[in-house]
Image 1: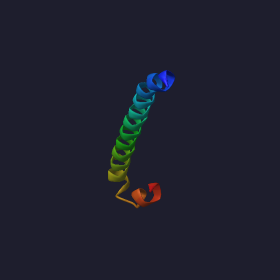
Image 2 (image 1 turned 90 degrees about the vertical axis):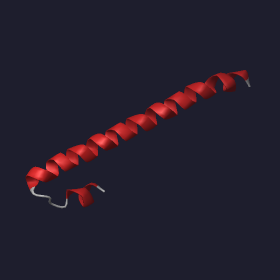
Image 3 (image 1 turned 180 degrees about the horizontal axis):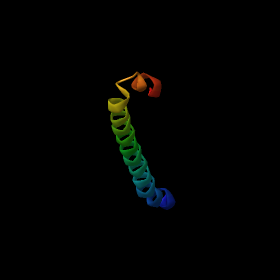
Image 4 (image 1 turned 180 degrees about the vertical axis):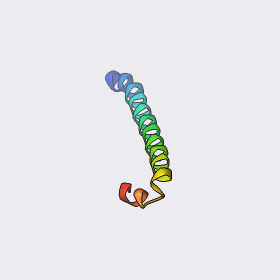
Length: 50
């Protein structure tokens, strides 16, 4: 049980870091999609991504 108690904070930090990385990547992708959409002329890029 001591090993589990020591591992719980590490697992939590890993989960939080992965979640934050996913959020940051998602924001970057959406921002890049918007930046690409404006010059292209607002084609259906978002449905293709989704």
